[in-house]
Picture 1: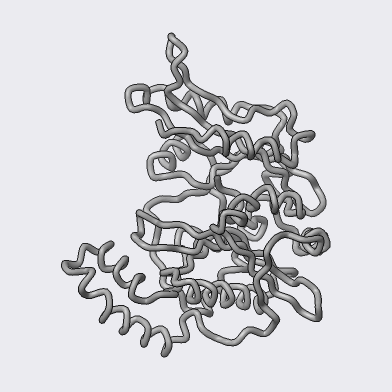
Picture 2 (picture 1 turned 60 degrees about the horizontal axis):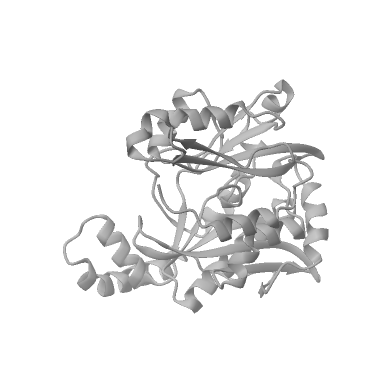
Amino acid sequence: MGDLDPVAWRSQWDAYPFAAEFRDVAIGWVLETETGGVVGYLGNIHMLYDLGGRSVKGAIATAWAVDASHRNRSLQLMTAFLKQRSVDLWLDGSANPTASRVLTGMKLARIPIPGYDVPCFWAARPQGFAKAVLSKRAIPGASALARPVGMLLNARDIVRRSGRGRTSSTVYRLGGFDDRFEVFWQGLRADPLRLRAVRTKAVLEWRFGGQLRSGRATIVAAERNGTLSGYAVLVRRESPELGMDLYDVADLQALRDAPATIRDLLLGSIGIAREEGVDAVKFMTGTPAKRAPADELRPYTYRLASWQLYYKVEAPELKASLATADAWDFSLFDTY
């Protein structure tokens, strides 16, 4: 198993905004040997969701890991996760290919969001993006070819208007989550009926504050008529599996799912990535309403090796409410 950072783990739970609602819910499970050694772990992140004014208590599986010599006991951890009470919704939003097969075998439902397994990319630094693509395809001499291929990609993107265009609203960076986000959340939850994680100022600070202070995240805001109309949170990471430096769009919200606001936030995010020399911007579209504005900006795409999103509900009325793609607004906000 990988090392668990006890300082980061403790600081996360010390600042947890939903302690009162989840006081009787575990924060995870471990597998132990007969001598007390820990050989497996599954984290249990609690998240409060809103569905048309109804409060939904969610549990998100995270960091499922078991030592190779004890893999035959892995299901004990997931079984404990799925058997926990005092929650309404069980989620796994980051299943790898092995976990995907296990969760399918355990009869968990797929979160029905078309296209979530086809992420969008925009090449902010064409040379770095080209090198990553060439290396991914095992093209000999990827480093030497990166510059000329990057120039061709840049020319192609200019012609296709990939990640390019004028914004229709005022788009700018913010240094933190201020009181406008409280007002914004009230407007957002009054929008089309959709399951959304609560995004008050306190929750956003808990979720992204550490990354903002470390310089690994930034907030992009869109404003219309002096009012916050949408925001995106970008989290910077090196992606070994893709071989490039990325800005993940970890969260993107727009009042009334306005396509123009979503487009403006993506354009603002791509512009920031260009300014900072980041290779690409990656966006996982967690509801059909966000896919069309993203596709208008002509992204590069590829299909993931497996489906990542699974859920379980037991209440019949909640199961019916979550049966369609339009009922969901899922993002990297909901993955840990």
